[in-house]
Structures are given as C-alpha cells and as structure tokens.
Image 1: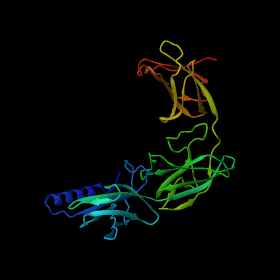
Image 2: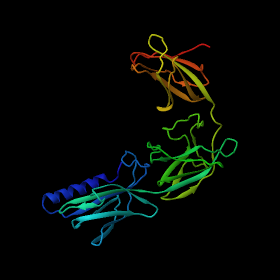
Image 3: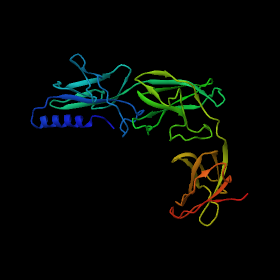
Image 4: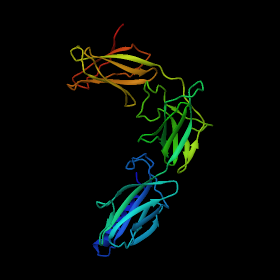
Length: 331
C-alpha cells in the first residue's frame, strides 16, 4: 500500500480548489517510494516512502529547479512556467525507476498553462546476499536456486515472489536486486515454487548464529554463513487412473498435484486414462482431475507418497459437489 495517501489526496484537492477559484499556478507534483515488492509497487504490501530524495525539474536551457521529498515521499514545484520538462530523482545507494508521468511523443512532461503535471517514481536499492550452499554432509551443492523472500513488519513473507540466485559448481550463490529490509534466505521458500523432483528439498531456511533472517540496508552487500540443506527427498512415480462417471477410462483428462494450492505436477492422461505423476516422499498433495466435459473430482483426504499404494483411481463426477473417497487399486 502506498504510504502518505491522505496527504497526497489533500494536496491534489487543494490544487483543484485553487484552480476552481482561478488562483492556481502551474505545478509539478509527485511521489517517491522504495520498490520493496520486486516490481509489484501497486500492492497491499508495504511500500516504504522515501524521504530526502533529490528531485530535479529541468527544461533545457531555460529552467532548472530542485527540491527534496518530505517524510511521506511527496514533492511539489509551484509557479512552474508552461513548457516541457524532464524530472530526475536521486538518492545514494538507489537507482531511479520512472513509473508514470504525463508525457508527449518525445517522452517529455508537459506543463500546460494554469495546469499541473505529475511524475511518480520508485527507487531500487541493489542489495546483495551471497553465501555457500552445502548438502547435509557438508559438500557444495551446485545448480540449486536459492531464494531471498521479503519479511514484512508483521512477520509474514511477501506474497509477490522472491529473488533467486543459482548456486555454481562450488556451491556459491548470489541473490541480488534486493531492497532494504529483512529477508528469509533458503530453498523452496516461495510458496509459488513448491518442492519438485528437480529441486527435491523441503522448505529450508538459513539459520546462522541463531538468526533466521538477513537484514539489509540500502545497497548493502552481505556474505552470510553457509546454508545447509537436509537430505533430498525421494521421488516416486504415482500412477493415477481417471475414470468417467460410468467407470470407463477417461483419456485426455487433466490430473494435477498441488502443495498449498500451488501446482507441483500437471499431466494429461493417456489412452488408458493413466497419468504418471512425479511426487516427493513425505509431502502431502491434493490431487484433482477434470475432463473436457467439465466433470471433475478432488481427492479426499490428501495423498502422501510412501504411505499409500502407488496407484490411485479418481472417478469423475458430473457435479463437483458429489465427493466420494478415492479407491486405491489392489496390486
């Protein structure tokens, strides 16, 4: 959520009132905040306002003026002569990213007579976290994506993705492009990237010297102690047979396996109505199936590999509300 909104709206309303009364002067306003959401600024997550950002408004050869943002990231230039302008923002350890402004075909901002214009920026702080990724025996682990996920003030992880860095042949990883703040660093932390056979590890968080989070200030480059993963999970091929309501094999039906609502595997059944799902032992999955006719069924309860037969039957129902337990097939 963008901070300082009430003040911004009050400023806009005050200008409109002056314009109504014929007392408005041309002005340029805007708002600056930190990109704390990895490119998703318009969210209900925290987007910290940036105070003290140097803003320069210029028109080549004719006009140049500077100001700084206030405590809620707002800035304003009054009595601006009608013309075309460029707006630049600068702050140590941050890079400028222009989000929105009124522009002409040359990309310049136009300030009309007795009018106003605005330019909105976010600023990107290129923080870096580096370290070593080791397996449960202390050996370097190559080609594993390590994630850094933003932690908000209430302790929850950010909903909009994670930055990633792939470990190299010596197990070294580097995650960059991070804003200031607290992060959890680990493997399979982002719930949108559930554990899969290609990365067969349970969700694992870095924990160094009793600290489970990494704190960065703007533009900080931090080396952390090794991230050690547990033994990899064993992959199983689970045969799922899909049948229509009459008990016949449902070929070309879709079968999905989900972890916390995120897809882990998704296949289409063959001519015999069989799909071969690659699942990891010890993880609970929700399995469901549907066909082109809109008949569907979800498995109840959840399936956990290694604890049940490796072949299951899902019988499609004409109505999703007609739920019946799955029937394991005897060997």
